[in-house]
Image 1 (cartoon, rainbow, N blue to C red):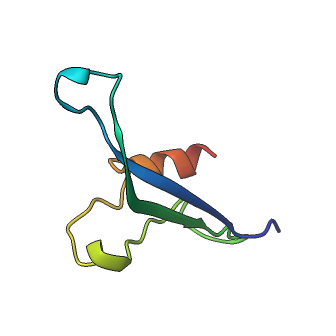
Image 2 (image 1 turned 90 degrees about the horizontal axis):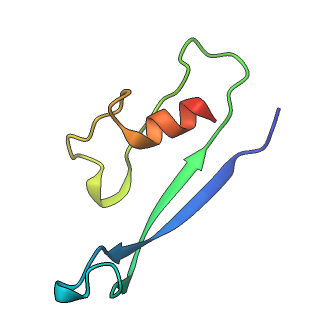
Length: 73
């Protein structure tokens, strides 16, 4: 069975004012994703939120982009 793997993705501002896609700003914020392959599971993928957004009403089904990417991977 493969080992767990982690992704750490930096946050950024999308566009700053009139700079369109030329100006951006790096932020000291990150999204950390931990993936744990399971050998035997009835679910094809499971998403769980932890940290500052743990109690937020974020989708954990196929409407979640991380869910879809994990399922395809």
